[in-house]
Image 1 (cartoon, rainbow, N blue to C red):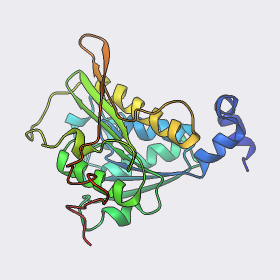
Image 2: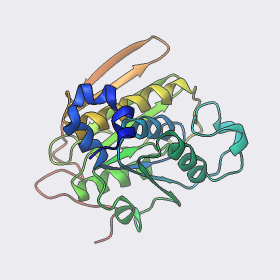
Image 3: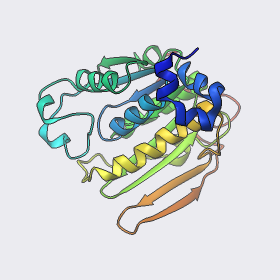
Image 4: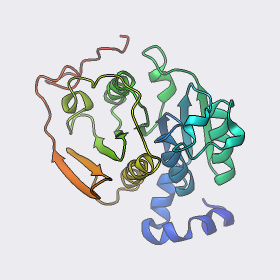
Length: 250
């Protein structure tokens, strides 16, 4: 059931999804790994859409160099833990949802517990080791993994459905070199909104997902291209009949 405030807040969305679709959003839990450049727009748009419970994990504090792209954090938040800064903003944006902020590093010992009964995992990370771990966790939980990545004025996104689509290890069998990469705030803004859109579509059963499709956005040329993907039968994570967990215990 919706309160009067919720009905007013989501009035325009209910016109699109119906009350049933809005209730699906309200009853959903989404796990977001990262409260930075990608995590900011993703969490904002899922919060205002009415996703009922958001689990947000980050281990860093706000720095001045973050503020050209991490729009959840303000100048006054410099030195504050990102989870504290982000959760305060999200609760103010929409007090009708639940925000669970976890201030720690995601690793193989805690990832499954943190994800818990979430309905999906959103990749808002800036490093591939953690992304691979989240990819495996998604397969262990049999829930979707919404990948996004950015560099400079470019970005990419895809939606991974365990057992159905190519997984992250199929798409990127080898991680790129670690680096401090250039980025303009509009890049994570664009890709983060694509990821948030995919989450909303998945939860409400609306539209067509980026399944087995890697969307690539080139902000310099203002073009969007699509790369068709296929599962790798020899993938160490999802190849064959059984899922193999490289990093996960047990």
